[in-house]
Length: 193
Image 1: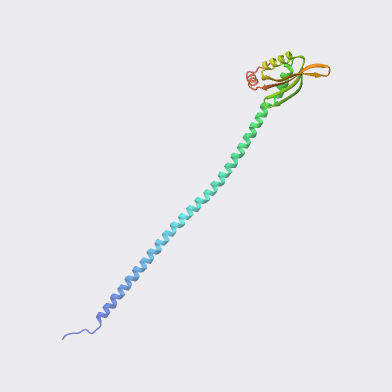
Image 2: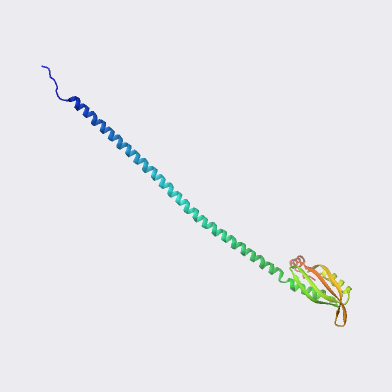
């Protein structure tokens, strides 16, 4: 006897193949979604890590900028202190100039010469005075030129004047104060003459 299978096996097979297809498609879709999510998570982690590094660098740059500003302020303060130091050193160096100038003038002033005024501007000194004759002014200039503290005497003007009942010569004389010879004398321990 011949057996005829009247069951809808083709439909079952077709349904089974459809189920396998949907399972495979769902598994592939789930795997695809998992890969996309994993890739997205890894990329976001790297972006956040790089942003954290960038933020750290920005913070360090801000800190370095503050330090650079402090260094600039310190440099300005150092320059101000150095300029003050130079002024003080210049004052220290020049404070004895007036004493030496007056000492040398007292030593070198010949008889018959009288000073009316002395004015110092830097290293230049202008003297105004009276002399009994032109020769006395020449003697004063020679003595000042020989002085270790003074140099380059130059006569600006000499003219006849009346001082009381006496006829005198009024003169204006420029001289320069020198620093090299007194320092050399101080280094050797000798007093300048």
